[in-house]
Image 1 (cartoon, rainbow, N blue to C red):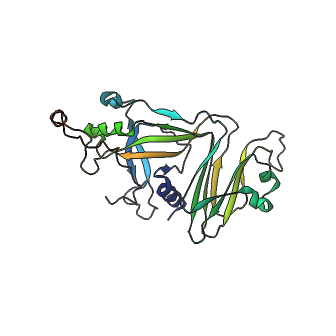
Image 2 (image 1 turned 135 degrees about the vertical axis):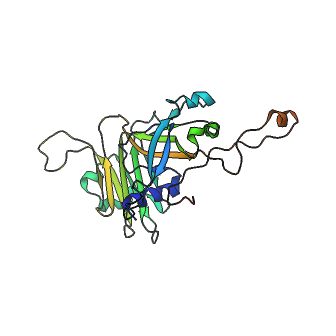
Image 3 (image 1 turned 30 degrees about the vertical axis):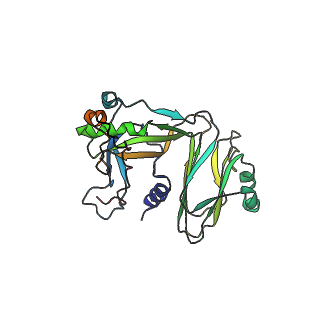
Length: 269
């Protein structure tokens, strides 16, 4: 299993959201399309991935307007320097003061940092850190159920929620890693001839797979996490009821949101 698949799988099982392996790839809430393996059918030896291929956007295509689906809302814009994170189920938050002996002077001076412990015997673990994170979402989520009436979207997936941030870090820990502290440093790197400081991610160990981007602007230009829903009915409930049943005093069925889309290796279809 590739690092990408392990990372996506671990964070999806914890959050029911897709962690992007390429957070610089731009997408918007309302984008719709398909999930593919990211490989041609004849290249069976290549690792199976789960790639979202955009085909349109329900707002740009006027589909949302047709069904009365509200415009997306943006949450979290009021905390520009806040650090947020998503972890796999086998990760626990750790008091960074307990690992001061392991921290480099640069890491110790980071004002933005967090520590994690990995459950013994829990296998590999995944962590996603985001600075200046905002969440764009469609509320209520049940409004997307109207898309069941749109033939073009049948058996497609829709981006119903998206995270955007100014800096991100992705970490995939090996099964032998016990803990890690990750911070965002603003000091000039050692050996650099420039006195200008550029933010960069630092951590207590070099094991596992790590990648990240840091920016000294507040611009949210990375898209590290998003939620997909499937345009298909779950449990036979279309979310609609007849006027006659309402007039007769019958209780209409509960309107459920569209089911979560699953990574292809988790899907039974």
